Amino acid sequence: MDFLDLVIVIILFANIMLGWAFGLIRRVVAFAGLFAGVGAATLTSANTSQYIATTFGITSAMWAHVVTYTVIVTAAILLFEVLGAVYQRYLDMLVAPVFDRLTGTLAGAVVGAFEITVTLIVGVGLVRSTLPSGYSYPPAFLTAQTWFNNSLLAPHFYGMEPLTRTIFSLVLPNSIGSYFTQLLNH
Image 1 (cartoon, rainbow, N blue to C red):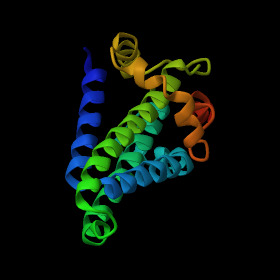
Image 2: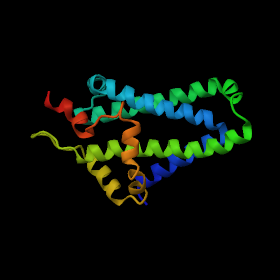
Image 3: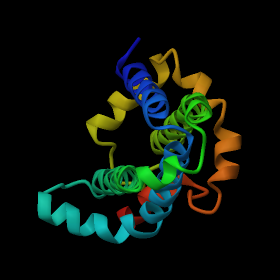
């Protein structure tokens, strides 16, 4: 079990526990946050990453793009979680409590699986991307490649890739590699 497997277990466990604690509707809100976050990151991370690179002194354009994309998706998920918490009282009136907890646990597992699969789609797309001549992968990418290759759990979640790509087809780039390397030619 490597670091990637640990991250997968944490994401899945956290979503299952959140599903049990807060129910189905909050997990649906979390899924909306994931969807909106991937869409917002796809639309804005290329331009924002240049600002992030200069502000934080990140020398690799590709690394700055990945960091920006990740921050935008994570911020959207957290924003939707906070909105769900703010409106929890109203959301609780929509569904019976026992049904809500049981289906919330199941929905938490599903949302966690989608979060993991989107992460793997982006990660594998980055690791498989071809860089323009004169560029080399940051060392962290080589470490990530080792994590993907040695992971026990990642292949099972990556098997959901066709379904996840279909569901997220409006917001997920078709070619992850070319999306993240688009700034390297400038």
